[in-house]
Amino acid sequence: MKFVILGCGSSMGVPRADGFFGNCDPKNPKNYRTRCSAFLKTSSINILFDTSPDLRKQFLDNKIKNIHKVFYTHMHADQTHGINDLRVFFLKNKLKVPIYADNKTKNYLTKSFSYCFKKHRDYPPILSIFLVKKNLVFNKKIRIQSIPVQHGSINSTSYIINKKLAYLPDVNKIYKKDYNYFKNLKYLVIDCLRYKEHPSHYNLNEVLNLNRILKPKKMILTNLHSDLDYNELLRKLPKNIKPAYDGLTLNL
Image 1 (cartoon, one colour):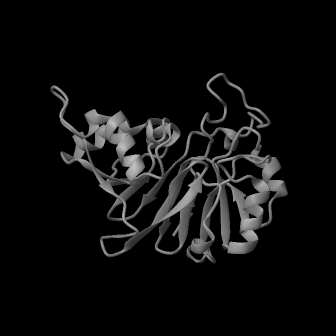
Image 2 (spheres, rainbow, N blue to C red):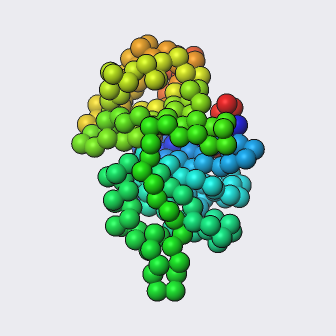
């Protein structure tokens, strides 16, 4: 079972569409960041987390040949607007791809991408959508827990896989009542947008504080803005914390 960071960049990616790298060294391949998505690969099922606008490139770069289920963290464009690239798996498997989301995200997706869910002229629907539950089990081996976390003015859904890895790409607050779910995990993959504070994302000082509280064996920083050069960030971090890069693979 492997968890792959398909994209670890913030909402505009690194570089931005106009070529701007900010503080990131363009000579380092780990500073080329597509927008956030992740992928759980097992022997029996492939699960995608979010449909980044860069999804097609991510599939090609990581040689992903099939997707069986999709989980959404929230409704924002940088997590949803690659949804049309799921069409290939409907065509390949002759089955609608099941996707899971909270109520706000479900409403956004079915309204904004209605053609994916209802027949549109000559095009059949490609997706079926379900409200995400707190606990879901697939093939008796994969347990996914969903925990709401704060992301600015909305909640985002974080996911914990087999009580080993938590994925929180967009968050500025874990509710204290839920801290125990996130303590002592093998991997904590978490939002770290920049050095300065932000109203809807954790910054570096905040995740360093969380590291002391939650004590993961390894913390992986994602949703990295162009402020954060990979090598510079690596030099600042404790040994158990690493910045993500596109294609980073974690063994579960």
